[in-house]
Structure formats: C-alpha cells, structure tokens
Length: 350
Image (tube, rainbow, N blue to C red; front, side, top):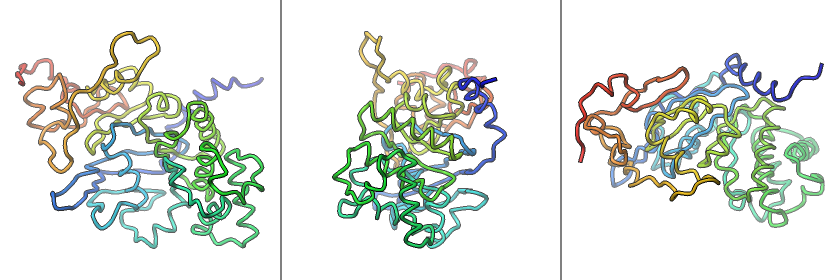
C-alpha cells in the first residue's frame, strides 16, 4: 500500500526525538571589548540540534542571531570580539577549544554557512566553478578531475541547470536566485552535518524564495542535514522549522516546538513579534513594538524587555527571570510564566 506523504512527514517529526544530537551549545558568551566597555553580543545562549532537524532563530536586528552563528564557526571579528565562555559541542568535540588551524578543517566538513547576500558572498572576478572547487579544496585533498566532478555534482544537487556549462560562468551572468543556489552548493559541497542559513532569502523575490526553501527542504530530506535557520520571517519559520528560539538582547528568551510557540506564545516579546506580522485580512493599523532594544554595553539588571513591556512590574526591572517551562519542551524567561505571578502584588510601574 502506498504511504501517505503527509502522514510520513508527521511521522518523521514524531521520530525526531530518536535521532542523535549533532550540535549542543551550552551557556555561550561572545563579547566585544572596546572603549565604551564590554558589549555582550551573545550572553548565555544554549540550545541543541538533532540530525535532520531545523531550528529557527528569530528576533529583531542586533539581537545576536548572526553573532551566534559566527561564534559557532569560530569567525567572530577579532581582536575586538572573542568567545569568553561556554561550549559548542559538535560531533562530540568542543569547538571553543579548537585552534584556528583546527577550525579550518572543521568548517565545510562538519559545519557550513549560507550567507544572506549572494551579491557580496561571491567574488566577481572568479568563475563559479573555481569558487565551488576552492571550498572543496580547503576541506579535502582531491585530484583536479575529482574536484571538478564534485563541484559539478554540488551544482546539480542545488538544481542548477546545465552545471557543466555554468562552471565557467561568472556571478554577473547569473540571476539572484541562481547565485543563491551557488552559495548553497558551496555550503553543502563537503557534506557537512550542520548548515547555518543566515537569512538566505532576503535578497530574493517571493516566487524564488518559495523555490529556494523547497530546495533546502529536499536537500535536508535526502542528506539528513541539520539546519539552523536565521530569519525575521515567521512565515518561513512555520514552513521550514521544527523548533524555534526567540532571541532578544543577546539571549534566548523563549524556545520550543514551532506548533506550541505559534499556538501559545508566552513571552510578551514573542507575542509582540507575532502581532507585528502583516495579515491579508487585517483591517486595523499594523502593530508596532514601542521603544528600542537596550544597548548591549549597558544592559539592565532585570528583564531586558521590561522597558518596552506593557505587563512589566517592579520585579521585572530588578531581577532577570529564570528559565521556566509552562509546557513540555517549551522554555521561557519571563516572570509571567511563574505560577505565583497572578498572586503577586500589582506593583505600579510608571
């Protein structure tokens, strides 16, 4: 009897817990040191990623999403920035303890990144083939003929038409969607276990976005890739991700299964982000979050969202909330998730 593909999709999600954890990040801190003081770009981030799973990381610009990704790859801008503490366990190895020489052997082979702008990611003076082969040459030592064949296969895997001919093309001869596929080919050419996709659809129009997301999903199903998807778009999160982590001011303030988070967002910041999403049937004015995120070099003692939160009480300004679990596999750092919140006195905050 033929299997229902929709049923198979949900069965695959149910079996996610039985898969191996390929990446585990524990209490990661990445700081910038400058004349203004210490800028806490990533301030105690923790999450895990299983084989074949997609984790979405969402939040406003400047919340630490990209810096978290660069920390995983050991590519933080030095000497101003460095990983101060924490663990990045990939395939049983702590990447924080690796030297730059050792990291060059890990990037591409075990963890790779798709950058958000293909216009600036590809070198305009080198052919597409030479750039794909360069990525292969860094992580593997192949003969020239083998390198060419693998580069062609990588382009074919991302559905680039006539890959043999495209090898000699230059970036300006390709459309934005094709260039983004080439960036994807470079990322997967060495068959890594984890790919970080940093807003890869930002420069694409809506039609090409859909094709590219479907392509990533097909590659993941074929290879078992684990993907970290950094985005501002909750529509992409709903389509692509199994779990989602919401970042604010350098920390993950809420995380959980996508369905749980969409159905019952608990943190006021998550609720505000979702309320800001445009809807076709919306008749009222589009919702906007008042105020600005705090400066990362002068963070408050309490909840970092308190200044912008309509539910904030005195306790929110004085003490940062611990990680609470209102539901299974649903973590949130907010005093509202504390069972004693409704019994606490309503301190007025002007």
